[in-house]
Length: 155
Length: 155
DNA sequence: GGATGATGTATTGTGCGCAATTCAATTGAT
DNA sequence: ATCAATTGAATTGCGCACAATACATCATCC
Image 1 (cartoon, each protein chain N blue to C red):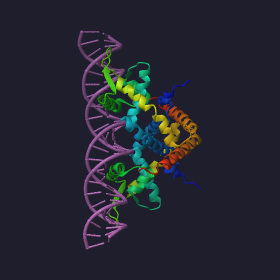
Image 2: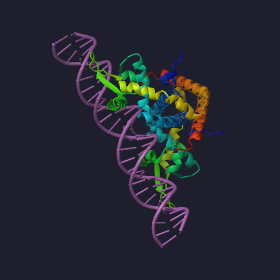
Image 3: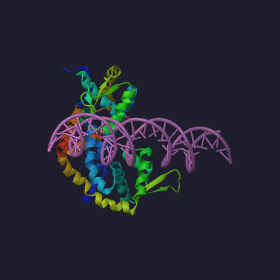
Image 4: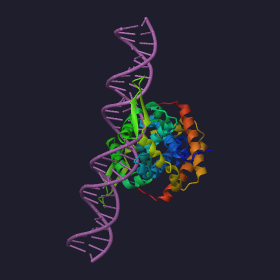
């Protein structure tokens, strides 16, 4: 009994659930990250740079972009803001002058200690069972992988 | 053998999977919606207004906002752009001059016919089984409901 | 009925995302 | 060695999101 155009019903759309859930989750992060003086995308960049710092790696802007699926139009100003706050330093490549590499400063690395409690605090704030969240995460990653397989790295 | 701060690993985070999957899905919509001259948030607003048009309802800006979890700071300029394109008309309430109501124009309603194919075309483009997507949608809605139960309508 | 608070939208400012373009540096071909 | 093509980041422009504020209108209380 469903009309053919029922596919346009807002509540039937996966995309809308994804869109809304994402914004709701980011909204939950916001007050926690505000304590660190970070926005959510800045937090993601710091996660990437903290991981690199563990191996004493500087990352190219493009490598950060590959990890987060973001381009220089987003990352360049974001990294400049982090640099302005003294959390990050940016430097031109020595061998190849086109490349810009990024790494956390000492202050940037120290911020990691404060950030450690964020994931757990968020988990408590959501009130959803961890195993359900992990299952959700895996399903989202699987869908993402399928999407990227179909259109290999448009970016 | 996992260190306590492993929670900061990017790939372990649900939020990152959500963030990335959402952007990937919206990216899939973009070329389809470009044929209609709509952005993704504009498309969501049109979905809401099309549903209201079926019952011949004008919606308050705040009602559109409640449905999409968006505020006037986002909706006012977005609706003005839709109005400029002749897809929507906005009018001050007659009884209450504070409220602004919105409804699709004839042209706006006609666009619905073109939009009908979008969900199905997107489904094909993803290459993920529909039942998996429906399960994902339901899980996302359940998580969203839990989030909103914990912080009832911050907005 | 005039001050007071509440309500609903609009405005301003900041920070993403992303397309498109620009520009310098590098690579490759002849 | 020179020119063309490619690469990598930066820049520009536009449209969200969202916080904070402004502003007009309505409701209430005395």
